Amino acid sequence: MSRIKALTLYKSILRAHSKYLPMEMRQLGDAYVKSEFRLHKSTTKQEQLQKFFTEWDKYLIHIEQTGRKQQSAKSVLVDAPTSHSASVLEENGHSNTGFGRDVASGEFNEEQESQLQKLKEEAMKAAAGK
Image (tube, rainbow, N blue to C red):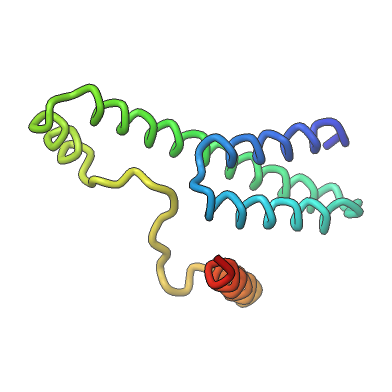
């Protein structure tokens, strides 16, 4: 991937964070994206770079789709009568169209578990620093 495409993806992710994520998630997400892109800046293996950018493309799509669903649900709640709003939420199967998903035990390898633990620790530090 060219440098220009990498910068475009990077900026698009930060823009999506700004547009769709709550402030706490945005701060953590921005820091993580910046860190990951810096770490992979000097990578020359095409296979590794391809996987890196493919995963970040998927992430960007996820953030944008989830953010749009959230905005759509909010507009339905604002525009619709209360009884209709409740039925729309029930049709969705849940009342929260937020970010994230449940993860099954054993879904991550050891390195990913370690990275997830570090992310959790950083999130706890950020929350304590308020």
